[in-house]
Image (tube, rainbow, N blue to C red; front, side):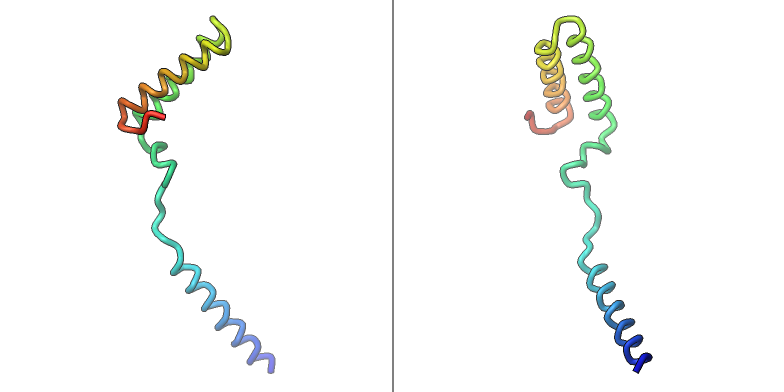
Length: 83
């Protein structure tokens, strides 16, 4: 009886693994595909740094405005939606 249960458990485990592996699709970055675009990431990092400098010099609102302006320029330059 124990070998029957062990065999049944092994078959159920194998079936579960096969169904799980079959349902996994190829990896795609989805909404994070921009992370592999090095020029875009560098542009956004520069926009963030510029926004931080403007925040220190002129205040929070001016820094946010500068960051958003530069980030949108990065989006337009690299073919991403201007959002």
